[in-house]
Image (cartoon, rainbow, N blue to C red; front, side, top):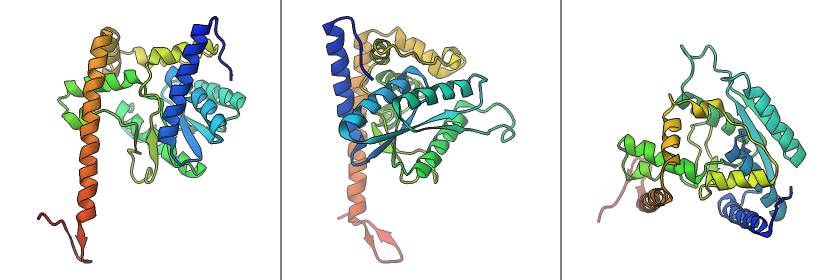
Length: 271
């Protein structure tokens, strides 16, 4: 796909965004020849799709995509089919994954249950597609929202670090060996939307994103009122927490390397 613009500044901005995205994909995709994409049809995941396709073509890699239909809204299947149509135009193999949740619980599933089901479906899909890594469309805005939600809940430094750019699947055993990456975490949602507008692409707005009964929606409204300085301050705090979390993981791995195994038990020398 090509980026159209009305002036050289717009073209320069679009080119810079694509280069930044390509660098992120290079860093996170590693040795994987095929990158899985979780695409809902919202602006964040649609940006992930088009930027990943451009990156893959330039690098000689492959991409495959999946959309989860939670079955919670009548429009969900049509939206998933809309993503499938976009993927077909881009030459990207696409699958719709349907969650059959009715009758499994006493009422409407909550967001936590839906999230676990989504990751389990994606993990099964990745196994079937022989994909070892799935990219998610989380943005800088998502990081800030997560920080504020966890701070309100009293989380410590580990939780305040938020989602990592590269992590293991959160479901077990379905996600064993599967990695998740988040190449767009340094991008603001609005700059990604500007890029989509320049491409004359439209995205799906989930009505639940306006439902104030959800904490995420209320937090998103709060973030929209923050000054840029406040957002930057949160990102700096999260960056420090991420460094502490990475250091702790490195220390844990080093301790594991020192462990001694005698067949019956494992000991860690303290001297």
